[in-house]
Amino acid sequence: MNAALNSILARLETIGLTELNERASMLTRVDRKYALEHDRASAILSHLPEATRVLQVGGRVSQGYASTYYDTPNMDSYLLTALKRRRRFKVRSRRYLSSGASFLEVKTRGARKTTVKKRMTISPDEAGAPLAGERRRWVTDRVEPTGYASLVPVLEPVLEGSYERNTLLLPNGEGRATVDTGLEWHSLRTDGARVSGGDLVIIETKSGATPSVVDHLLWDQGVRPVKISKYGTAMAAMHDLPANKWHRTLERYFPEYVIDRAATRPSPLAAAA
Image (cartoon, rainbow, N blue to C red; front, side, top):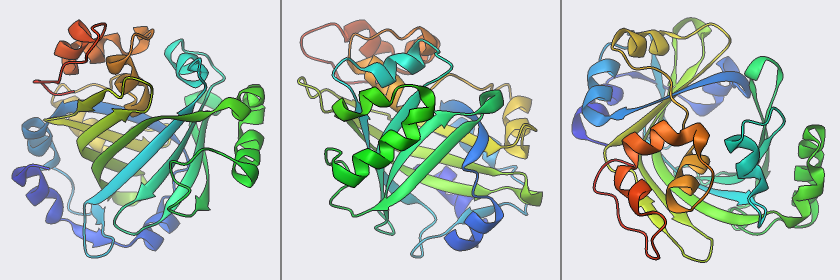
């Protein structure tokens, strides 16, 4: 994270993880995502209300995240999202590097375009490992309502991603927002491609149907929600996959990689990914 953005978020009053989850767990929510550069993010977030709180874990307000995403050899989970299927799912494991906690997570679509996330605690050694036994059965049960439980037996790790995250509790219980920087991705498919996010900041608001104060701050400066998925956009940039849903995001934030992604060797990004 650049110094200006870090300074802005570090000035906020802090909140612990237990209190944050008590006040706004947001496992079922409306997500809005925004992609912008560090300097612009810093300028906008400098106007956060004083009552905004930032999550602090282990004395740090910026937490490292490491995620592994699972998909089938035919990339069915990716395609369900890329092709905008109403029933779809995403499976990942996540390690919180600051606290050492690890979870297995399944995300599905609920009513009115809400995101429903279910998760179970796992050991750090299990994060990123192939699904087996109880873990695979748990995933199967959560995917079952989408009609795609038959795909779970062939899910395998396909992408690793890491980034730094600041989590904000918004005033008056209106939701949460996250600020992600330092994004890096590594494909676990045969070519082992890598992408670095450079100057990219992803801000995600998580609230009910009513837009939050962060949404309004962004809108006032002409920043609108974009179609971006850490998993989907990164895989589309690194591999020759259908990407209509993320085409504009790829053109703006992955320009060199979009040009070269069909080449035998992926080229590194000079611009923000």
